[in-house]
Image (cartoon, rainbow, N blue to C red; front, side, top):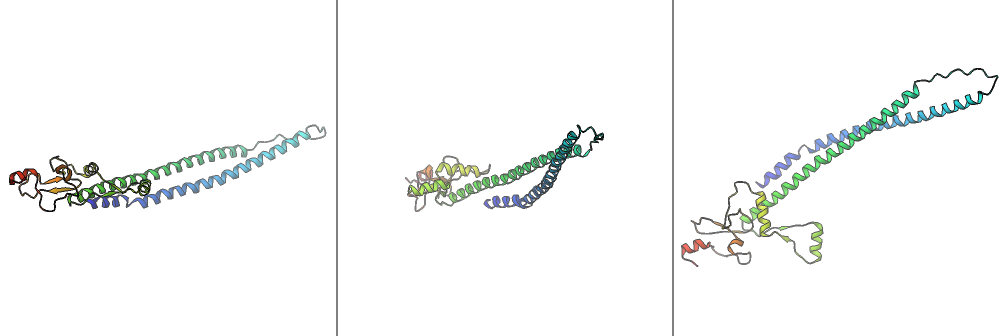
Length: 240
């Protein structure tokens, strides 16, 4: 079952490159549109400043000529539509730039959420995978696995002359429980699923068959070298 997690994850991320390429292509298109609008906005603003300067200069000339009695009547100015259209265009361009900026921010957040979703799934699958390995090791009678901590914990352990963290019986049980199926069988006197180191009773008619080390008073140091029988089967066999 362990390979199922890897296979499932590979299948789930198979479309990630294409999805990311699509997202980033869309963001590039937003950048290109925004750049074009920025160029247009800058040109419109410069034109608006130039028109304002020309109008100011024209107004000064009119004020100077107003006191000249010999001057002919000044023709009424005919306001053009260009300044009004320019102001509206600047307003519209600014609004469009703000809209594109919001779209780009939203796209960046969606990319982050999309990648984060797959990272979280990978973390979950790895934890389940590790728990399943611990269960399989315990069924084979292998010693508990060492679990690497964080970099800070590892440095502190080396500095203090400590050893890597070894999973306790309760930690192994919780890990196995997290990885277990609903139909996982129970063993031992404690009626719990398989975890940690276990030993099998050699009696062919043993009703329990498998036992956790801690439940029968065994450790890695006093592991039986020969056949081992549970206390019920020893009674049936007349052994102490």
